[in-house]
Image 1 (cartoon, helix red, strand yellow):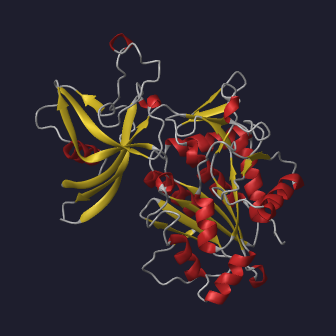
Image 2: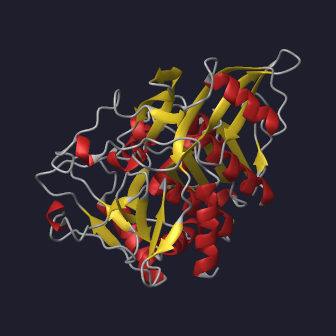
Length: 428
């Protein structure tokens, strides 16, 4: 696929996925269109050799898999990513009135860079649980898709030290401004009911919600030669899209699996997070005997796909001199002696060999020895499954900002590498 067409699809996916719920809905739609059959936990599964299936949990985590056509190929090539990103989530009783202005209280989700949230055009999206006309509880996705709020900065005239280490208090500095003359009886649930009914849903009452604000600025290619991709939620919708398209493009009869978990940004300890039971429960239903399951896992390989830190030209001292990944120079193998990443020599060698076979560049990241690094679903999945694992990611700038930056060439390079991974029989 031409680079521009691939980037166009990626940017559309990001725009259509302001929350994990929307991301999973989009991936489920693409999988269904490609012939993958949706399974339900409560139903009996009738799986067939060569069959293609997917299943979701909480509407925010998804597992898709293709079974091998040949019983001799009882192994899985697996890719994992995560659907969530740092953001501002709306509190349960959020309405604030101050000096005639209407605001909503928010809670910071994950390790967000907070300063970039100021002075942005914000919209609102998520999942809403409602009572319908029949008195039944139903769940709807909602996305206002237009600027409905902002968080204005305080003028520098009123804070002369703003450019000298100003801190952000999440409780007092981040209430989101919705409007002014909204009426004394304004409340968020009524606004949600109106929005849903205006978009064709039959809603009597909003009971509860999971909502987050997001920046409405569309993804864009930037730079004099369009070298960069700027967008919200590149961490980690970029990897979700790459993993999904690689699986759909792979031409192979062997087993493949993609999992995109929620809640990675807050530790993964939830029913739909990587520390939950979801992936293992799916594998146990695919391989119903413990002996077969362990044989398959022993022969399988898992790639945890999550963005890496590119070396920033203004902050080169934040990187080890020998391990400063560059944008547009290919994906990054992430290594950490303290097992914050799950890469070892075996999995690293495998992926380097795959890249060499098709002439793709590959880089390596190790954090400075006097700094700590983040982690991924890689070590968690490796520990739970006992499967050999590698951590891999596209290098980016401004990770966890409201708008991040990646190389415009790296998405398709990584897609080609993961497609090769799905298609190749790795035996070591």
